Length: 214
Length: 339
Image 1 (cartoon, chains in turn purple, brown):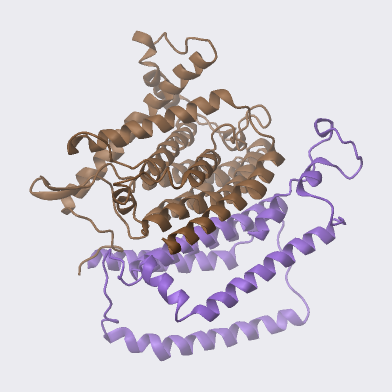
Image 2 (tube, one colour):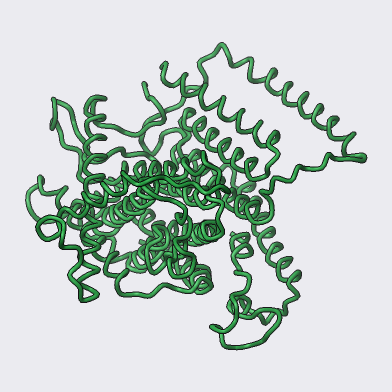
């Protein structure tokens, strides 16, 4: 259908523009926003491939949770109009090399598999709103818990380790004993141990730590 | 197979779809000022006042006066602001709010109802169902965030930061609270969930889930006692401090539409949707009546409970609501497998 094709080119152009915006923008805040736009365009591309669940997950997890954290942090500490310093040292020489290698690799992948599929109509899949349909949540869950069980569990274990690690690191940096709770953290300021919560200026809210653990 | 974008299981022809969208859109936008009037009237009564009663009989024309005032006000932009982003933020807010309306079911599919076409009394019935609402809910955050950041003022920024922290904290609990219903019904689609409640409404077996959903729903819609993002006693008006006129009106309208959406989702997922005594043509009225109950409840809570402190809000979300929601999912999963 013509509408699908128009939408594809809009979403594809949006994805590329977003990806370019991430690297080209000097202001980190705009970079993060460009990444959000890129992720939304990717979600539209997933929809066009009738992978509705993946599109929704992309929006909920990446645009909704991960990028919120990015925006949060960048808005707090970055986002200034200070120009970024040009990179010096060995990194400056190795950077273009890695970029070139990556470009060649992606080009091989695209030419190797992508171009071959240009003349075909794509795989025959059962689409529709039913439970057995391709890309539906039911199919997705079944594949995750049968064929891809091991990678799925490994990925979730990795995330758990990362979450625990983030909590441990955050606690160590604040110099806290294990007895401190989040409530104490929010109430006590470093200068005073005044137990009256209403007299103490509110300390650093424990938000980034907790959100990071999610 | 001709599908335009994804598969949404539409029962009707394109013309009827457009007509349906316009009806839902128009009706909800007309209802928002009326809810505003209802809220002001009820708040007045709760606080032993009369509420607005000067414009028109019983103050019924007050919403018209409010909208007229908002439309004719000047849009002030601070010199530190980013103007284009400040204009974009309310658009994101209201767009995501209205888009979410599409999945609220007001009734089952009516055969041969309009111009010889079947009509489902809902916007769309997507296979991902409730996840659609979460996807747009996730994007709705950027309306508040960009609005606060682009205003270039401290209070706006603080408000948007609070909105960010609050939304990610309570969205997980909100999702988990609905997971129990999804597992019991065996479907993500809201219409199928309502059909599964033919015998017993899910508020009975999923009462804990219902409570968690209501609490997290208050937080997601930024309604008191969870309105930390605009807490007017602390940070002026939070993310919309620098907004005026209809841009402020858009944020305001988005909040009320979000309230309607949460009421609609709660009706469909817990209160049996269109099920109720009487002939079939009463179905949409049952849905509206149940949603109305929830909206009254939202207003009642606003008038009754004081605002939480910020750290209380966070520790409540992470230490009580989330474990409770997880436990609810676990117990429901065990019960679903056993029965």
